[in-house]
Amino acid sequence: MSSPHHTAPCGTHFRFLPLTGRQEADIAAASGDTAARALGLLSALLAGAWRKGEPVTLQDLTLAEYDVALSGLYQYLYQPTVLCEARCRDCEEPFEFSLNLPDLQSAAWANTSNFEGQHWDSLSTPSGRVIRLPRVKDLSTLQHATAQEWAKACVIEGDTNFEAVQADLAQAGPLLSKDIKTTCPECEAANTVRFDVARYLVESIEGETAFLWREVHLIAKTYHWALADILDLPRSARRDMAALIVAERPRVRAAS
Ligand SMILES: [Zn+2]
Image (tube, rainbow, N blue to C red; front, top):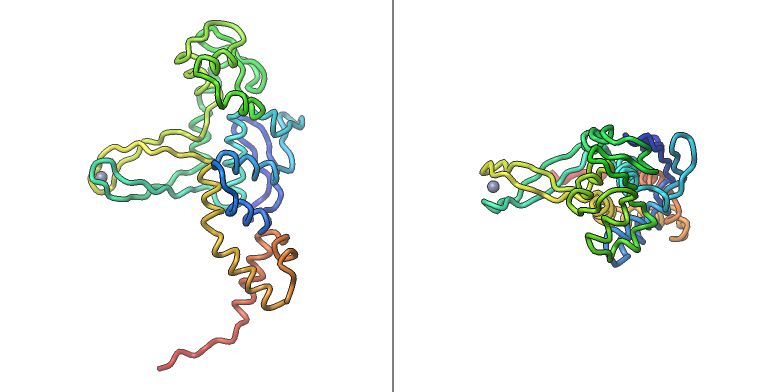
């Protein structure tokens, strides 16, 4: 597993705790929307976040920083590349494409230099507005807000034309959860696929539940440890132990 530190293109620095089997099992068993489950996971695993060396709480992160934190957590647990599955809107054939999260982040943050100010405080836009980026703590109130209420909540000075404010927000506080343009390898039709980093993270952990229980089973059977103790192991340690147990099994010679 790589270093638990992750620095975002916005300069915000994140540090994560190891994922345990208990958290993996909780994610798989939880119901509700993936956004809430991703927030719960990040709040359990975020050991700290720093902006220019100053600590910042999860609730105070802008949604753009929060997106980067989720992406950082994915890279800490897995790798920088995500493999997406889609179905072509023209020929209906399934196809896969990969995305590199650091590249996606760098491209998304490229236009933020058009804004003057600090991204976590207030920003002057080229269109003459002064805006504030929404934060994690705003999510519960903004969740049910109308487009106009959302725009008003983010404008400190200037007009609150929703489309214009939305365009400012998209550039000043870019989100990795976005529509990705891709081409079908079968018929070469242009496709737009929604990528959501929160959903991808939660579904990746959910998709490994069978491995989790197999590793727990191997360790319980070998060492006779209690389930609670095995679930408290960091995922990397549990996997290494399970791999050693498998490697030491007596080999069965295939019948010729
Ligand atoms: Zn196609």
